[in-house]
Image 1 (cartoon, rainbow, N blue to C red):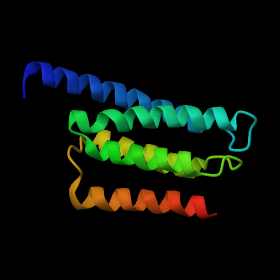
Image 2: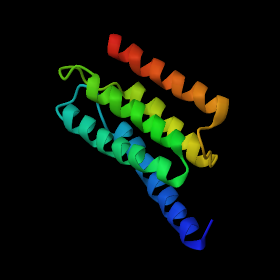
Image 3: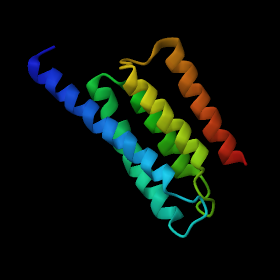
Image 4: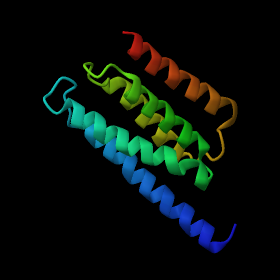
Length: 128
């Protein structure tokens, strides 16, 4: 890996860490059924979409997969149904684990179990 690649990866990690912290701030300051529910959902989607778009480019395809699952949930939920805070929180926590443990690649068997569990959480919320 070149110095420039290391520097870009470090910038990605810093940016992504800040983005995940913004997700947690959104979770902390939101009521699911409040008047700003759609804006909140749009803000969460924008963060997740950016994380999903860049993860694989920097060696973190597990982040891409987590972001993809969250974006899919947010796009496919009925528009008259508020986004579920527990679904968003589960994804934010998973992203934090990946970053805190510098899990590159797909995370192996544990990564597969994690993404499968996140899809189950999202699908359960969609069916509720």
